[in-house]
Length: 259
Image (cartoon, rainbow, N blue to C red):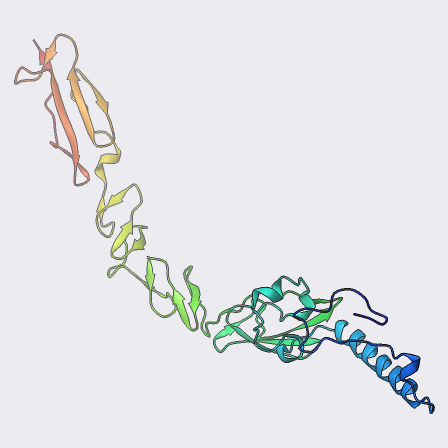
């Protein structure tokens, strides 16, 4: 390229790259009008070139060659962000001019701060500020740990159901301090058991200890052993006691007697 600009011509940025060509004196007529017209034309093009490179172009028609889209890989290689659209937040749409983009959340969505409209400005060749994605909006609040997963739709923990997660997922209320943790499943305190924590756990305390014996217990069973020189009435020296349905079975164990 001749004239005041040298080097490779612009590639992929403009439909019609700007070119400057000085006019030789031999081309100028005696009236010198052509020299004046040529100078003004070059000055006008130079002014347009400076303005074009100094703004954030958001119009594909202004900045992208015919036949290419804004996502064309050849444009991304130019590494000139001010010639591209800003990133579009999820669940939103945008409307842009040369220096400002207005981003609006779609129906049923909002920005994390509760707003629905935000603006981005071209500052020093970059779109600012960054805008977060639009999130679903529920007109009524989600309760009991539920979260708004879709517009006006709460995603509930397994223990709750209903439009606002307001209802227990257990058909019957959990008793004695129990908590519903899933459909018809209660988490009981140590003192109770059953589907709805309705039965008292008698196995928390060890079973009665027969006379002249000792015992070794785990959570659900105990082994009772007669002391040396003693035995149970049936002649054995060991007996098992087991927690069944929240109670120790058998309910009683005979005392150990002398051999």
